[in-house]
Image 1 (cartoon, rainbow, N blue to C red):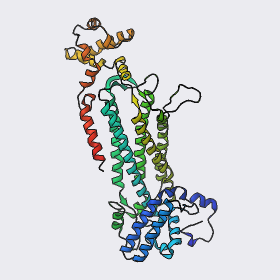
Image 2: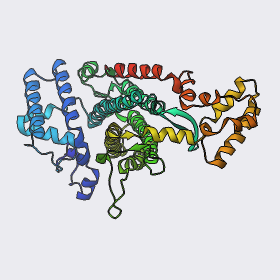
Image 3: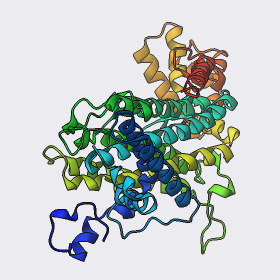
Length: 460
């Protein structure tokens, strides 16, 4: 059992205790980050005169060889080591001798793992951002292609007022835009370097923490060494942001599932993003959307785990914090996979324009516009509301749309109706006359704002 701390112990660790304690089975994900942090630490040690140039060069060459051999499959990360830090240091010492034992000078596993976690989360934020941008571009393309694709808007899952598919998808663009901004804000806030905090109280070595932070792309060192090793706020924030992303993906998945049903038929999923039934030959199931909806609970679980792990931990480092990894890794992998799948599912789907428009007309979504027509003719709104309610009831009894109701029936309820009522309640008029900022008649402006955001975020 390869351990870094055996000096004051006279007995071997019980195997069950060792297995329970070790973390290399999952923290090997930190391999690249651990090597990156070690390179920066060694460069700083030499700059401060703590290591010689020869020792620095020997350690850097050894780290390079370890990284190369792991990536090319010549060296396996073995679970005979307690953690990824033990593995790297032990293999380094085997390869370069005593100089390898100096790698840990001025450093604790506490600030080392804190650094690895920050580097890892920062990398994962960048990858998640790229996936969100890909999804935003897909949504934006759907919006541009469907400015005049009329459909019912809903409240309480009841048809409410006519909108366009562009406007409907624009709401999801806003959700995923906020998600993107949210994780970039987390990245900015967490971009402080814990290396040099030591176990909790810093070190007597003359470390240049600002230089190490600069080498690793951080804005500054963490201001307090105890906080540096024990802070996992950024993990909680990121998993919380992932939970919000999954909530948005789940809402969109729910709509895709509904729109894909035989009763709606608004959307046709590509065969590559659907599955069949083992017994019913006619079935084409939206399994990917359903799985995204289901996996949302899995990410929520990771957030609950993180909050629960951290809630009772006194300063500074405690072994409980080892539990910050597995659930976080799973939440990240799950969310990234779901974002990518949603992008592909939307990009390959087709929308049934005619079916959507018919659904809007058949759902009396233009009733509010009919009431507004009367108000513009001088009828008080409350009276107009009652008149249109009675006309809707007539249409329901005859099983026709308001557009198909003869003019004489309109006039029976109110004499001010004239032939222009049909233009006033057409889907085109209902949508395009709603020109207030953010409304479906304002789509050109909304599309321009979306395009500007995509151009801006693409440069970050």
